[in-house]
Length: 138
Image (cartoon, rainbow, N blue to C red; front, side):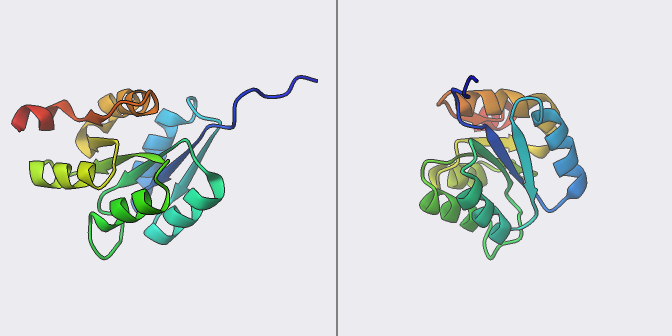
């Protein structure tokens, strides 16, 4: 019997909005072996430790004490984990803070349908990704 040559590819989705999670899950479930959804910071950190995902897609406004806190904690606790932030905020200050805190990508929620798959491919290839609308505004 042949053994699997690659480790299982898991993506971790963290957003408190179930409709958003379901939409993102639908876009990513054909690209990964498993898609796991969580709705808060504690669950995100716990799942990241247990599942060792290939990637995490995290809502910037996930319930935490400070918006960038989840980014800093995730990067500090799991520095090898690549993650993309989803946000409604398009201010350069917020984007720069998140990227400086360790995020590999930043996608505006309003553009997730058209940009998230591209962002995932870029980040998994070792590149970074920021929604073009934000880059043009800087």
